[in-house]
Length: 325
Image 1 (cartoon, rainbow, N blue to C red):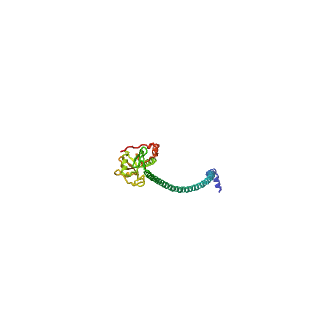
Image 2: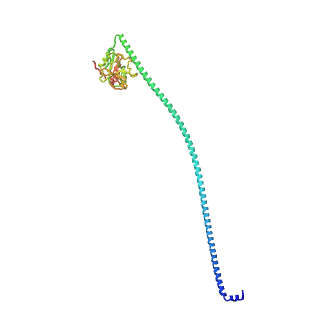
Image 3: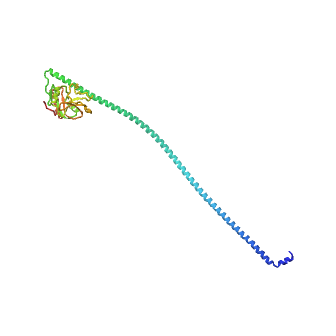
């Protein structure tokens, strides 16, 4: 710098210095502001990072705590599930055992049922056999009883014939009968009354040592017709054994008949016993019908008083029909 410059400079120097200072101040002021801003930005950034780090730490801590709770809960759940599983396994084993026991019981019941069915079948078979045996015994018993009664009747016939021959040989044939009995052709007849079925009338006659009347001639029929009960009377003719084959109680063949026109017709329902109407005609009827008359014939007349005594012991059979022609 020349002296002149210096001289010249000295003159306006203060003004220039002031200008330079002003310029420097202006340049420095922005620098200070910028540094402050940077510092503030750094502080804010630091605070933000600190806050973010704090949030991260808090989140991590909360997550760790939640995870621990979840682990504990999961462990408890696993333990509970394990216990439940063990209990279910035990229940399942018990159910399997019960099922096996039930199967055994069912098999035992089925076996017992089969055994009982077999026993029932055997018992049913035995029962059928017993019923058949009982039916056979009843049939044989009835047949034997019928044969015995028939044999008894034949014996009575033979005894009667022998008695007649004996009395005839002695020349003293009896011509009288017990009280309430009627004599006809060397036989005694009793005309009973009182409602009876055919079988009851038969047994009532047998109780009086006779049988239901059998008719073998028109003369005998006329004798009985004159004394017939107007309500009908049982006679000793029936077809109980073979339908349509009528047999007398004395086992004599049907050598005489006096049927009502159109009879016998069986009524379509088993009319197996024969009655004599009030007109004297014969009619097949139900054996279970109650008739008020029944005729009994003794094989011979009798001078013995046994029939009379029996009649007195049984007053219900003492009613008789005395009507004569």
